[in-house]
Image (tube, rainbow, N blue to C red; front, side, top):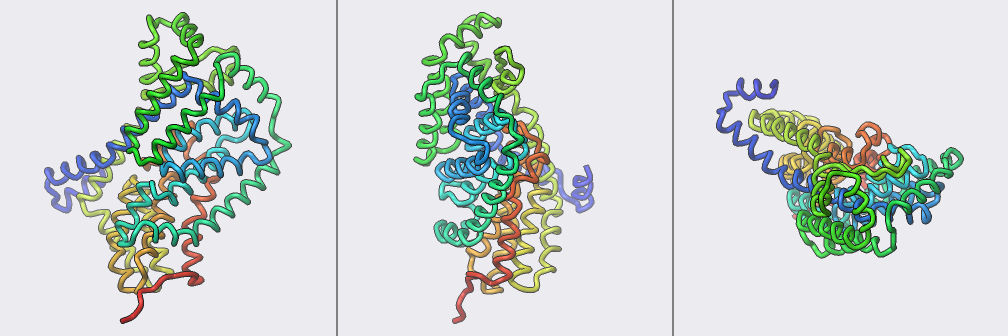
Length: 430
């Protein structure tokens, strides 16, 4: 309401205001569609036994002492290969959260490890949309941008792994391992868990690596989940049909995709672990994203975003303050504009000319955009990224925020590297 009054005070025409609102909502539609498909994907992967199988074997492969480090590494590898933190968190991340429950670990810490790894891969993958967007806005090429990010990203990742290693070692004695056998037993009694089910996430990763767009890739993942449910979980499907009002498997599968699925294993903890909410469970996040996009459109139409950006330019005195201002501007846009892409595009366009005036190469700008806009978006509860990942993992944003060490350290590492003038690339004088 306040931003609307400001726009009215600035004599913004209603048609222009409405156009900006519709434009920002349109820009968020791919994210909304992906979010709904993630709900469907989690449902079909649970029904098919894919996620339970990942949890079952993951318990055997992971030791509590290095579980958090392994979570960062696995999430990072998958996200690096796929270029998508969202897909990584929705698939591998959900399974790791399940294993964390089995180890009786703090969900916020586990989610922080997952997000740290996923956003490392998202930031460094040539398949990532933000990794392509940042250099395009700054005016450099993709692989120059990725190579230049190594100087800030690798130290940040190393520090993150060290912190999680220390947390894992200090928490080892507090972890209740007696519950893991109960969870494995409950999973084995409910699902068939042949290793073949692990081929589903591997195949989806291969499809994404082949640069299939996210929405078709998600649809393929859902189709694979349905197929494997029909092939491997026939007994479970029959039991669910008998226990509910479904008349056939087709109706059951539609229910799992669109709404919730609850199992009765005799253990409330296992039932909670193996329950899904389908697309319906994502609707509250969709409403939040729509409200955020409306707010963003009103702010942009009323000139508020531009005024905020221009005010920050006054603080630029040298290279370090320029980079720090860029990073601060991106974070501010993540908070106010509620969208990761706007947080890259608007500050990037605004700062491009100033970087040239300071004789800084465009990869310095593109790295600053990635080290701030990309990684901090997931830390804002009302940002599309923060709202989505919180919903997918089932962990409140402020619960995992203190443990997203990679995301928290990245902006400061960039400022530090700039302050010591390490590998700061300048445009040569002619």
